[in-house]
Length: 290
Ligand code: GUN
Image (cartoon, rainbow, N blue to C red; front, side, top):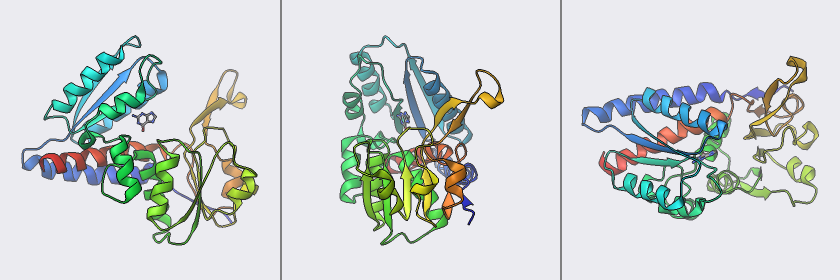
């Protein structure tokens, strides 16, 4: 069997186009959704993410407010900026790019964001809403994963889902979303016994561990849907000395021979994160002033 390749890049482009249409409609009522992105420090990967977020926000017709602060920024200064953005009526969504420098308590910053502007869905109020099945903002990467899963299979009720990784950003909300679809959900992690056997039970396998190609072909149940959240940069000596390439948490070539559907890396989950961020920002704008 050869798996269907789930084209996250194309799905995300379609989603962004639909969001841009809705933004246009809102504009006719005098509302322009605004997203504020805060970057502290000079982490190169974060700089790339923030730049693409800003570009795609503007492409969708929304206002983008970028705040770049030095790595030496004190926690109180960042909290003061968050308070200012909370009070700014032109800002519908606030995203503080993680990770933050050591001197700043990230949880404190997340909790300072107005839950109505928390388009990342990281605030405990929104995490709690997801857990209790109440509408709220859902973390963008797991939301994107669910949209991709449902693009190949609409009804997930009763399926065995295994999420490898227990982060607050991906693993835990992913598990909650799959539970909301009536899957039987297992969260596996670094201390799980016989991870291979646990993964082999999965009709839906979501890998979010940050370890290059850890999930091998023989970890996958024949016909499973495999979602690879990993973005790992590894050496690529065949392309020349010092060259690198990006791989996922799943050994793609092996897995694609066993799965029924699989996301590639790059071009799978990655583009969905920003598209879902824009979707959340549009929703925030509609709820606040639509
Ligand atoms: N760093 C890596 N992914 C994310 C994300 O989705 N949101 C924020 N705020 N920071 C991140």
